[in-house]
Image (cartoon, rainbow, N blue to C red; front, side):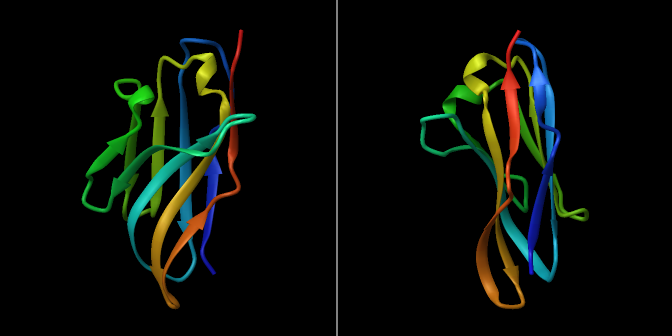
Length: 119
């Protein structure tokens, strides 16, 4: 069984920063892609950023220049450094990973961590 566990969410003032982490555990051979999605109240879940195992990244336009995704392959962990946060970044942030394990390739989700940007 593969699990993704997020941490690092919370309440931050506009203009502030937060760093999210997501650690994968279980019977894993490799993780080709890890990423972060978010879902704000009343909105669809959207991709925020993704990173491949060799470091290629992809960001949604609204976070370019403010957010940075990175990963530590040895620790099976992906990070999201979020700077210059504003109210539109308020959402539940979900970790996502394409994992190749004992049962073959599958996509997994974490349970989510709340990020609230408010003064």
